[in-house]
Length: 466
Ligand SMILES: [Fe+2]
Image (cartoon, rainbow, N blue to C red; front, side, top):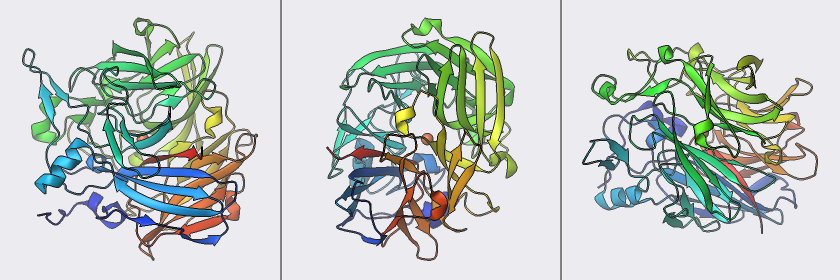
């Protein structure tokens, strides 16, 4: 029997999961959907069917996928859980089960089962596969139209360790670059660099040693370099009894960026000392010679995690800002500056400009964030790095916007639409909005209404129709 969910801030309001799978044909649309918008938007986030009585964290809820299929000015919708082995076992048991850990009989080292994960963080289309990603596990495949779960194993046994939820796809070659952390054991500084070709074949999956064991959510790739920034959200299993978690922000450990020339062996990675801060997400990166520029959302410390004394960050410390970094790998000099002074997250670009000089960035922002608003972002913003102008669409305070996903319409960078889901607190239901990426202030071109909520989630992608 499924029990009521425990009281927890990340199980309230629009963080609360929904308890059904639905298929909705031809959604009611206000405005009109562009005829050329033809393909699918996939979104994913935590939507636990069961949670443990103690110690739930938003990051550890079972993944649910929401798909919007667009064709000929109409849109259909469906949502399905990613039915991983862990999910199926909980479904059968009627309750939450702990992560399956494997212990090395010789060393006692503990490793997560890479094929028993949550599949809850990002969903991408690569090499004709729809892959749900979560950084402790292997990619999990789903059918692109029906969202039927197909399972783990797309990369066979070729992937060493786990794969980040934020791999980068090279638009010139279709090659996918990814990484994993704590590759050989929980609490280990071993990381892995993966390269997968455009057909889905693993070209390399090489292990290296980082300065310390830490949670590493995202990384940056340019045409010539791969960067592995490591910030001190360190992992130490001895913390579990007093902090309830092995992860804590440990400023004293310092911060480092691993720099590797693309194609070079991982033994050539050089670690450059960096300012202590915390980054979940990078917008993009490019290099001109030895100078790498990357844009990221910088936090003073890791939000939602304690320091090593168990103290959670204050309100101001938990706000991330769009920040531009310049790193000269020849001199190891780093400069950085905040370029948009409002709380922001979920940065995206026109993906055709990945790994090269971009002009336009898109992100969720909160110009008027209040304490206690549940961490919502209520605006979609466009930042023009050339003019320094921000244009935004405000969904209304109390409402929540998802990450905006860019869909191209024309050849020029930024020429296209942004698609995002919006939670409307008054309706207690969500909508999908279509915005002109270069004219956000004009408001949505089309709003497709759902009768139910899409809980606050993480990431998503577009797949053009075949
Ligand atoms: Fe992420």
